[in-house]
Image 1 (cartoon, rainbow, N blue to C red):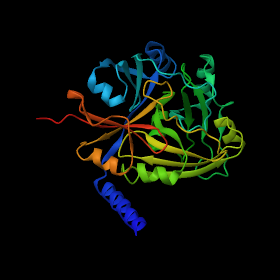
Image 2 (image 1 turned 60 degrees about the vertical axis):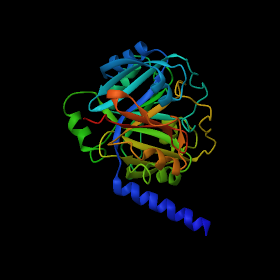
Image 3 (image 1 turned 90 degrees about the horizontal axis):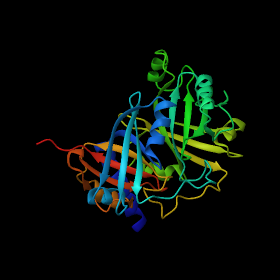
Length: 334
C-alpha cells in the first residue's frame, strides 16, 4: 500500500512538472578555476571565447548560495557563439585540486562540448598550444552506430585539468545551426552540450525530465575501440541520453555500462574545489521550487533560495549523482 502511494505521488509530481515546463533551458555552464587570468587567456586566445564581463562576489548571500563560508570570488563570463561559460576563482577559501587519477567514468566527470567546423584544423590549433590530452587522438565514431556514426570528437584538458571536448558533425547529424555557422568561416562555433557521468539513466531522467521538465532529445549506445580511445577508458561501453530545454546547450548523460568501477562524487565536495562544475538553469520564477525539490529528496547546497538583488534569485542543488545545478530566476520588475 505504501509503495503504491509513493509511486502515485511520484507520478503526480512528474505530471505537474511536465505541465508547468518550468526549466526554460541552460543559461550557462560554470567551472571553478585556480587562476582566473590564466583561464580567461586560455579560453579567449586558444578557443576564441569572447570575454563578456568580470565581477567579484562576497558576503552572506553568495556564501549561502554556494555553501562556502567566508568566500570571496572573482567571476568571468565568456561567450562562444550564442552560449555562455562562467569561470569562478575562489580567492578565499581555496579548494582542492582535481584528483590526478581522475578518469572519464568517475561520476564527478563533466565537460562541455565545443562544436568546430573543421576537426583537423581545430586539433592542429590545440597541438600548437600544447594542450594536455584526455583522448589519445581525435576519433571518428563508426558508421554501424546510426545515431553517432561519422561524428568526430577529441577530449583535452584546460590549465586546471578540466576535461573539454571538440566535436564536429557530419551532414545529417547535429543541430542545423552548427552546419549554418560552419559556412561562416569560424573554427570554434559554440557549446552544444555539457556531459555528465551518471550511475543510473532512469534515476537521472526521473530528476531532469520529470522534476525539472527537460525533454529527451536523443539516445545512443556507444562502444568499441573508437569510444575507448575517446574516453581513454578501456572497455568503455556507454548509454548516452541527450536532454534539451527550450534554449541553450543540452545536458548529456553518460552511463557507463562497462566498466562499472567509476568512483562516486565525493560527499564532502564543495563549490570551491576545482572539480566543481555548475550548470545554471533559467526558470521564470523560483516560487514553490524549494518545497518541490525537497519533496523529491534533492540534496541542497544552498540553505534556502537566495535573493541576489538585481541579479534575481538563485538556488544551488545537486542531482542524484552529485552534479551541481543552479536554478536562477531573473529579478521581478516593479
